[in-house]
Length: 350
Image 1 (tube, rainbow, N blue to C red):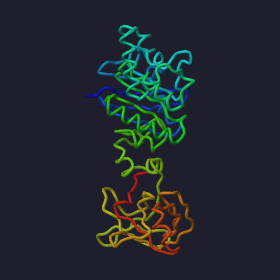
Image 2 (cartoon, one colour; image 1 turned 135 degrees about the vertical axis):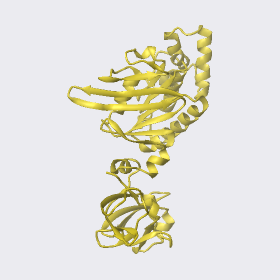
Image 3 (cartoon, rainbow, N blue to C red; image 1 turned 90 degrees about the vertical axis):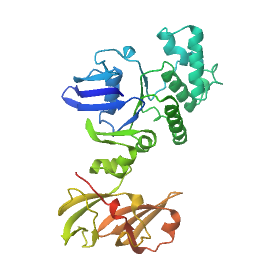
Image 4 (cartoon, helix red, strand yellow; image 1 turned 90 degrees about the horizontal axis):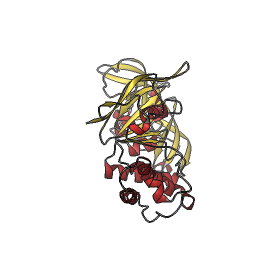
């Protein structure tokens, strides 16, 4: 069942077009991440879905009802921003109960029961009498989350809600959000510029660029099969190789600037000529086996990162970055052969 439809939404601010004929469908219970750099239109889109901005053209449909002209309070959505916006003079319980109170939903006893239940879901039911100033940043974040879900909205909209947390708390809250989504099955749209966050949380990632969809798909698809250079670089960073594709009999080869060649895996639309390819850093081996495409290489620098080592290698006239386990990196000489599976050298369309 489709719960949200964004139909050909355009948003202009003066002469600047922030969203350009944007289309999106979200299924009931789906967790969607809107991912992209600053200024790509992701937060504007979220605000239009919430009713805080009006589109220049196009419609927003929730549960089959066009809500484009309706205010936020008539859309049955919950919106959570970067700032927690907790009311300092109210206790934790009263902060969570606040949306029910404002909507006059149920009796006070029922409101308090639902607030207790929401706090239990985020594991803060022992903190009901505390005030926001008595909580850590992570605890305040969970109170804001409990307040967002207490009214049982059709859509939960999250606008970079973890950006103010330190690295450890961000990781903890990612786990909390994933657990909560799996428990409630609440349709969720999450705005982030952090690709790790999008890949870790979402069922579907919408990669945005310049007010349009660059690529859409499951996290594994976007990371493993990016279609464009922008997608390859934004999602995890990658080695972008500019090679000349040449035909050797029935086989296509990739010609490196220094003249080395590697066999290319057959791919739709791959023809002789200049072409860009993506090679993930972790796809490069410093100890290639016989099934890999290999090149002579030299290691220029290495950086130890704990569980990984990042090596800058020179191969075929190109500078490549390889990420390997520290044992493999330490055991290799400066001059060696590197390799990768042919399927990991992925042609890009642009």
